[in-house]
Image (cartoon, rainbow over all chains, first blue to last red; front, side, top):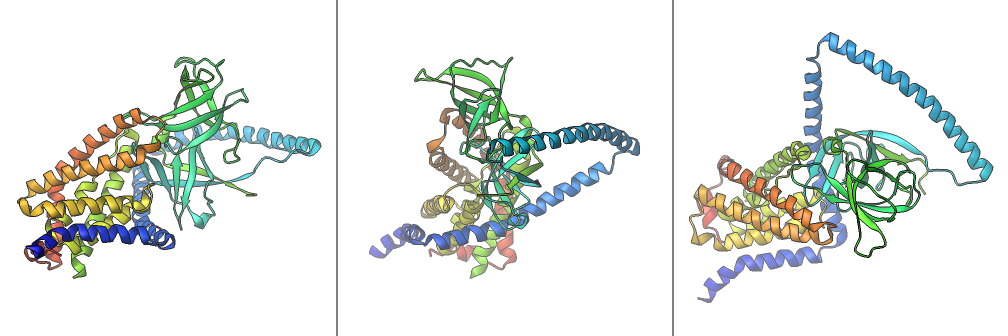
Length: 276
Length: 174
């Protein structure tokens, strides 16, 4: 009878041993295990990503020559516009540099732009993250801001040998210091409103009470530059709804985010050139 | 001896990798699939405790490594679920596929809720988050109901190819 009882208790005894062993395992060993298991799966993720790129390439090969000529013409027009804007930006940078010297201001941080393909999108109700196909091999640092043509994507949370994990701006773990466009007062932004079968939204808090907004007349929310991670002025989203918060001193509301965030295939990592 | 847990771990890693790709494509639609229960069920129902638990622990570690949770969360949750299923398995027809599917669905429900309560502690809008989670749970359960019979057959066949005697293995207690 006691041996039968022991047999019945064996699974729970084994579980107890596992949990105890895990809790006593040194952090170094756990870190090593985590890195090893991540790198074990990294080739699977990147191979699938390269296969998708190849699929896209073959799909694009099916376009007719007329389509390509048309696309080339359109690109030439866009390129001409951007060339002019680049010249303007260069002149403005020179002006900023001159003013910084004149007023002895600390210079703005400078970045190297590192474009990276998205290997994996992992968007659940628990977390929202991307795995990109560049990591320590391209000098990507932890905490680097990640952007795309529509504004902020998120920031790098983990860097591995040839991949990096990016916490998306829609993730509940991302909190940013922001401004409403043309206003210098700081406002807090946090991700986390991810409804089913619909684009993600964010939450904005500590908005001064003199701001009013609606879905028809939204206010653009931009990065403030405070905290030194993101350069100022990058679009996060548009505030579509504001209500007085419970303390009555501020307002809080919802931020509508670009639906393209959930379809990203390529992003740009801003690698600081002179990290402190 | 190593073949049992290695083969089982390899098949669960295959399903997990497929699921990762599926979630990549589902991301723009605002849906997500979680199949933790399915990854644990076969090892807990058909293998001995040592081999089954080893495969489950490795699966937990593999998921922990790529998800933003404290390292060991899936390991502990999966281990608890494995032991509970293992302890109860003698009372049921565990070799029946339909029973395996039911166990996978129940295990997935428990793991999903366990993970949700663990992760959502500091969520800024937990009410809205639960709506999304219930929708994801619904898609996940439907996915498991469809995929589980194929996955069990795949694991069984893979073990047969590895010359593992499943009948003898399932009689083993430790």
